[in-house]
Length: 267
Image 1 (cartoon, helix red, strand yellow):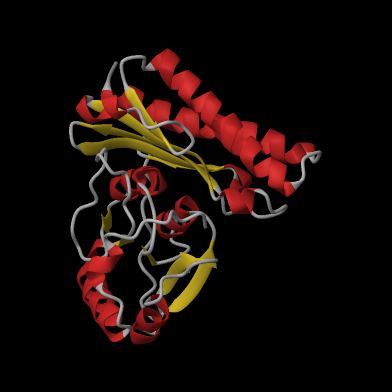
Image 2 (spheres, helix red, strand yellow):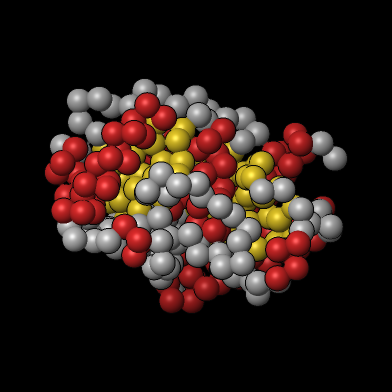
């Protein structure tokens, strides 16, 4: 097994899980409140079964599975979100949902893929795409469509940025990777499976990815809560980190509180 095999496997698993979700969604027989959990189960079952077959010695951390603490002593851990943007998956016609597959190895994310099944795309570390230049005249800031952080309105105003509400974390990160947005910032609740694959792919494309205070994003931790994130072009990071701190201070939202809040971002 080579490093290239892991990149290719992440891409393949995300793609194939996404195709199965498309079939389930197109069937049309399930109402949204049944379709959403059915999608979670279908994708989780497929991904964990394939990883058990193809990487039997690796640990797995999945949003939809029990947390096996043996992962904390493992050198290789697959971090997966079988269906990121479950809310959007259940809304007919929406395309901002994703499948996340990432590999953490000896302290670092080493491979990853974000499938956008309804858009027919898979972004991955196997074949990273060059990131288009950031839009300089007016930054486009992609944010949660249902729970934007309290300081984001102030941040957008300070930057003169346009806010682009969107669904899943993977879809938002993908927007920056593909050049459809310039900045993805979120705070107020996420977990490792929300960001591992998007961060792996973003970094492979040459983007900056960190906590909103500039500290590193750490994975395979005992507590998988990882509540905030910033993804943007490297050259914009210093300006954005400074602006985020100022916006949080002006909004009376303590930065430290952001590191302890983890409610989970569904969209």
